[in-house]
Image (tube, rainbow, N blue to C red):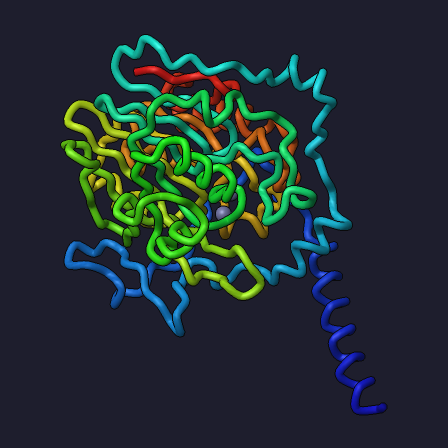
Length: 373
Ligand code: ZN
Ligand code: ZN
């Protein structure tokens, strides 16, 4: 009996200490965020140009930039007891403040990004259509009866999409890899090529009807042309992690994607914290004609900065990768964190002013709208 009580007591004490630390942590004010600068990537995991390379230990990809992230329990406790500024209003009010627009795919002049909510973007580059992290489900979750639900609906259905040449997946978190969406796209558009991070091909094969030849599993800096085309897809780094089940942490790689055409190019940031990898992407493949860069899901920042960027860091990424025109994504769709739901685009404007960049260089739009070059 006493043998059980002592460990139980010690565990309870530990949890209380973690909770106490978390509760006492104030939010860093969003207006004066600093740039998150993780320790440099280990020297032994770089290529001859000094570009960072992924590496594994015991079958799991490692992210040394995340090693100082506070315990996840402290986040959950602060989520339960800390402040929540999200203030998401009723659907009727949202229709006024943040309307969802039906996309218009016709009449493209040059290149275009259409935001389909969260991190889903249809990028049209040199006549090719590439869809990023498609999610059309109501919840970003393993099941559709629990987990983060949409507060803004998708602007179209999968059957409304134009013919897709490729789908790129940044990582396996539920808000980026949505089983229902990829399975349906593979069913209704069987010629689509799927570009996925290293370790995800077998998941695609067991969960979708996509032809194995159309699923390309890639590692950082790996390049591959789209079928019968000069347009090149490159898997580029990001500062993030992966999880889909209780014990599969980082068994699959994460990253960002570049789409390189002869006339135009596009970069998709996926889901990421700030780190040195972006300058390397810019040096190797920049400048990009256009980019989709995350700007939301950053409060409480003492925890979130290890995996997500705030709008100020997003502007740094825009500069690092040398984007000519960027679109803010990863906000306004699912409530994942606690900043006010309309704060990311407001802060983006503030940081653009601070960086002395024109507002048109990095924009936020309504879901369903497009940015055209
Ligand atoms: Zn993620
Ligand atoms: Zn995400």
